[in-house]
Image 1 (cartoon, rainbow, N blue to C red):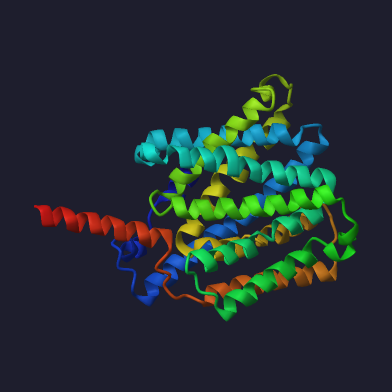
Image 2 (tube, rainbow, N blue to C red):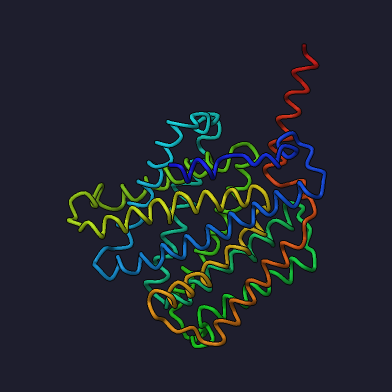
Length: 345
C-alpha cells in the first residue's frame, strides 16, 4: 500500500504542469524523466514476473489460471487502495462506461489471450519479437492520425529498439520463415492488441488519471476469464503456499503496479516513446535469467541490450514539450473550466 501511495503522489516540481503552464525546460525535463523512469520500472517488474511465471507453469499452473488471478487480485488491490486513500479515482462519467468495458473486456483481455496463444504455437522468442512490433504500429498511428512529429531521433530509436529485441530474444537462431503460420498470425495480433491498448489508454487519459484508466481496464479484463474459464478455479485448485505467493506477486508486482507505471509513463511521454522504452522488458528478463537461473547471455544478445538502451537514451535526449501529452491536456481542460467559472461569477 505504501508503494502505491508513493507512486500516486505528485512531485512538487510538477506544479507548472498541473496548472497547464509547462513551459520551463526544467519542468519539461522533470516530467519526461518521470515518464521514462516509470516505464523502465514497469519493464523490469514485468520481466521479473515473467521469470516467476515460468516457475509456476513448470509446477502445473496454467496460463489461464495466472491470467484470472492477476486480473482479479490486481483490480482488487487497486480497489482497496482507492477506497482507503483516493476515492475520487473511482469516478468516471456514465457515457464513458462503454469505452472502459471495451478497453478491458476486449482489448486488455485480447492482449493476454493473443500472446499466450502465440507462445503455445511458436517459440517464446518469436512471440516476443512479434509482440514488440507494437511500437512501430503505435508510432505509425500517432504520426498519421494524432499529429505526432516523426523526428530523426525517434525513427532511429524505433529501429534500434526493434533490432535490439531481435538480437536479445535470439531471433537470429530461429527459422522465422518456417514458423507455424497460425502462430505468426496470433503473434501479429498480440502486437496489434498491445498497440491498441497503449493508444486507447492514452486517449482515455485525456480525461482521467492513469490509475483510473488502469483500474477499470483491469477490472473489466477479468470478466471474459470468468465466462470462458471455470469461475474462481484458483480457489479449489489446491495451489501450495509458494504457488499462491507467486500468483499474488504476479497480480500485484507484475500487473497492478507495472501496468499503472506504464500508463503514468504514457501520461508524460505519450504512447510512442513509452512503447519503445518498454522494449527494455526482454533485456531485463534476460539479465534476470542470467543472475538467478544461470542462463548464459550470448554476445549478440548483449549487443541487443546495448541497442535498446541506446534507443532509450536517444529518446530521453529529446526533451521538447509535447502539447498532446495527456497530463498537459487534462491540465489545460481544468484551467479552461476554472476560467469559465470565474467568468460566470
